[in-house]
Amino acid sequence: MNNIQQQKKELRKIVRDFKALQTIEDKMAQSEAIFKKVEQLTEFTNAKVVMLYWSMYDEVSTHAFIDKWGQTKTILLPMVDGNRLRIKQYVGSQSMQKGELFDIPEPTGTDYTNTSAIDLIIVPGVAFDKNNNRIGRGRGYYDKLLENSKAIKLGVCFDYQFFDDIPIEKHDLPMNKIIIK
Image (cartoon, rainbow, N blue to C red):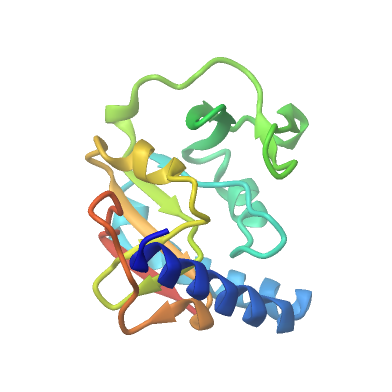
């Protein structure tokens, strides 16, 4: 493990310790505040096709936001397929099934292949910094997915996930913007 990978590992542990201190009520209130900010962005209001993520218990919660906007905008969600993410359209919680990784519910149906139509991608992460850099969980799913995308990349995070500077490697893709609470 090189020095940057070791620094990332240590940073992931620091953030995990902070996450353990957060109550569900705090997380939900902060998530709501984050998505109120997202709704005010012209990048969001102008977007017709938005890719999000179905949040895990320790991430900025997306479930209510997805349900709120699922009838108005085309909402896409990723699903894990081996070492990559496939994209599917969200058509309601009834069409979700347990995924192969982390037991995250994923949409069923056919793959969404018109990736050039995606206007905005809201991206989870473990840590972000003032230079719009992002560290994920370490598997590179989003870096692979985002590397050829022209969509606006919007990171969302709690305040304890935001740092002045985080260690990055050449394959780590920056966000266009980060929304923090």
